[in-house]
Image 1 (cartoon, rainbow, N blue to C red):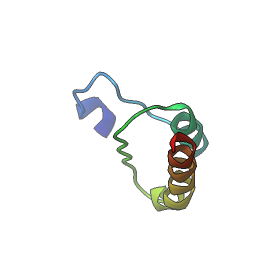
Image 2 (cartoon, rainbow, N blue to C red; image 1 turned 90 degrees about the horizontal axis):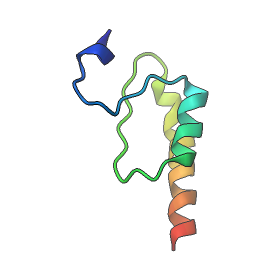
Image 3 (spheres, rainbow, N blue to C red; image 1 turned 180 degrees about the vertical axis):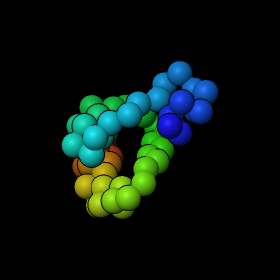
Length: 58
C-alpha cells in the first residue's frame, strides 16, 4: 500500500465522507489529498469547505 511508503507521522487513510469531516475540523494551512479512482469527486466539496472556512476567518 502506498500509505506504508510515506514516512511522515501525520498521515491518514480516510473514506470520502471521513475526509470531508476531517477537513471541516482541521486548522491545517496546507492540505494534500492523494487517491485513485474517483477522488476528483471531492474537489468541489473540499473547495466549498475551504471557502466557507476562509470567509469565517475574515
